[in-house]
Amino acid sequence: MLNLDERINFQNNKSNDLLAIGEILIDLISTEYGEDATSNTYQRYFGGSPSNIAMNAKKLGIRSVVASAIGDDGLGDFLMKKLQSAGMNTDCIQTVHKATSMVLLTKSQSTPIPIFYRGADYQLIYTPKLEQYLKDSKLLHFSCWPLSRYPSRQTIERAIEMAKANNVLICFDPNYHEMLWENGEDGVSYVKSIIAKSDILKPSEDDAERLFGSDIPERYIEKFLELGAKLVILTMGKKGAIVSNGSSVEEFPSLATEVIDTTGAGDAFWSGFYSGIIKGYTIRESLRMGFATSAYKLQFTGAVIDLPKLEVISSLYQI
Amino acid sequence: MLNLDERINFQNNKSNDLLAIGEILIDLISTEYGEDATSNTYQRYFGGSPSNIAMNAKKLGIRSVVASAIGDDGLGDFLMKKLQSAGMNTDCIQTVHKATSMVLLTKSQSTPIPIFYRGADYQLIYTPKLEQYLKDSKLLHFSCWPLSRYPSRQTIERAIEMAKANNVLICFDPNYHEMLWENGEDGVSYVKSIIAKSDILKPSEDDAERLFGSDIPERYIEKFLELGAKLVILTMGKKGAIVSNGSSVEEFPSLATEVIDTTGAGDAFWSGFYSGIIKGYTIRESLRMGFATSAYKLQFTGAVIDLPKLEVISSLYQI
Image 1: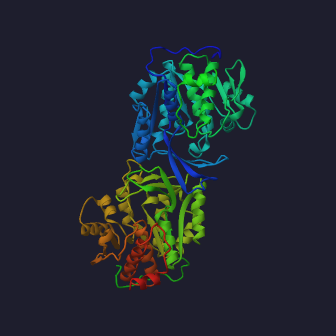
Image 2: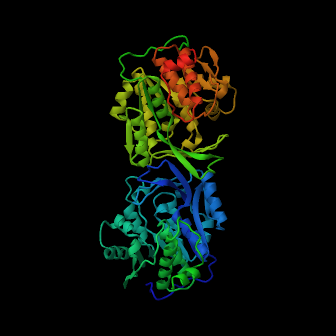
């Protein structure tokens, strides 16, 4: 069991902290506010939750590597250059003969429907190099994107097995979205089978509803735990989060005071939490580090902002 | 044989002139000039050659219908509204549960590589309604896009059979591009098999090189004719075109005097040519109408411009 008042003991001989496997993509965001794709002009941004988390984590002060596939095109070059200029290790970036994946988004006060254009991202294959980085890492992070299609699904399945065999903590963002799956496939059942193999989950209320139907937060938590997860962090926006390790259920408040842009707030949480547990804080402290990093990020526009070291955030939010 | 000095006799009891089957899509064009996707900002436009040809043809004064598939998303709505506001018949527009297809293009003086994002376009299926419009048309037009993937490939194959059985002239733009095909599939051989079933072809020199390797224009023409085409219009940009019906080979000069934007010049040719043969001009006159329409379009920016009636163009260019 993961006791909230204890630290997680990682093997000290690992040469890397976090390996994030999954999508790296172009976020194409409308320049004007509107509803579903009513805008005529779009701006491109570096995107993809695992790559954002890995970049954040590096800024906060832990070692991180991202494994993703980009296309052999101008947009892939753009993403690669962004990683390089952020000083990221790009050993696990695979370049494939497919269009760089893209998500078209409309800036909106409501929740407009994203349009997914998937090409390169799910072509990520399991390689000896990826395996080496995985064995050398303390944490494995992934989301639903690579699980939704082959061959990246196989890559994650093999990574999970290898992580279990090498004392790598398995952290899964069950951000299920029906549009990522091929028409007709039962993505919900499959995602549940992966939840069963994961140690730490951070679903949002929306994710939980898409997986289990409408229910109250406490029941969502139970359902995730019943499937086999060891620690469930159910995030509820400004209402904070409910966390359970199967023995106790605790509420954590949001630490946000000013909300300028919610983009990337979840990724900021993950990176703050990971940095906390890696730096030897207890799980409870690390959770608060996650909420503090998220609160810090909410004050600025953009998915990846210029985060300070974790120690600065921890002192700002008095953790 | 198609004699250049004769008119093409169409059945008079048809209720439509041109049925264009194929892609309708979003052209996402960079706002700045640059090389492959170096721009950060992109503007969306109505795109897709068959839809452009059908809209042009309507403006020139013949009856036209376009058959395409759009996604059930904001971009699909945008395309549908554009068709409606141009007064087009949308009976053969199919809405499917896939992202509306998109091509990302960089404005450039050279020839930057487009990035293709295909979703809805190749989901076009053969329906009783499509068949009815096909039987009721004089001309069937299509390009390589629907041929490159299933199920739209089957739709074109069935349309070709039905066209042959119903005296519909089969016109094919063999705009072969390797990136449209699935990795590993021999698109060249397949496109050649469709050329063999077509009446009229309008390849560009680039198309011919991609299909046959580097050669001289006269040999390209021979190769298309050997495959079985009845009339080959090999376009060569400002050098004009070489046309052959298998018995004679003739050069046609470009009629362009001012070149502001080459986008859509080929589509303008097709629509002028189609309007000519439908309105009862000889093939030679209709070819000149095609070049005149193309020359007219070259003076303006954009793929689909506000074309006048064919008679205005024919008098402007003294045909």
